[in-house]
Length: 89
Image (cartoon, rainbow, N blue to C red; front, top):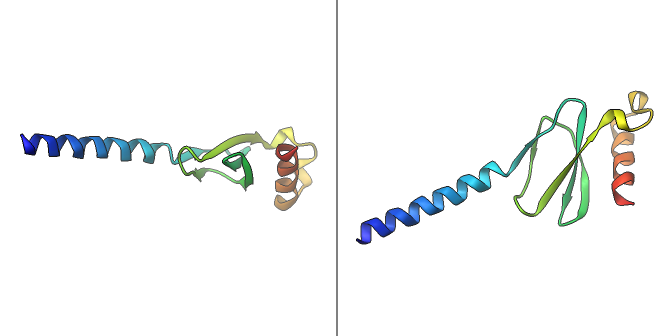
């Protein structure tokens, strides 16, 4: 009986860790940037392809680079500032 209970606890813990691990990553396409927020506060713009998150605390909003006017001739830093300005207002 005790062994079965221990096995159930292990299975539940393994399942919880698996769910958290799967929610920790977001995939961002080549033509997108990820605006990252933690508890509603803007943290910055992350380039792709893989963005690491803290589950249930972080949120990612994907922004297509083409949506920002003149983004072709902009530096990466200027692009980050423009995206930050859009989401802070």
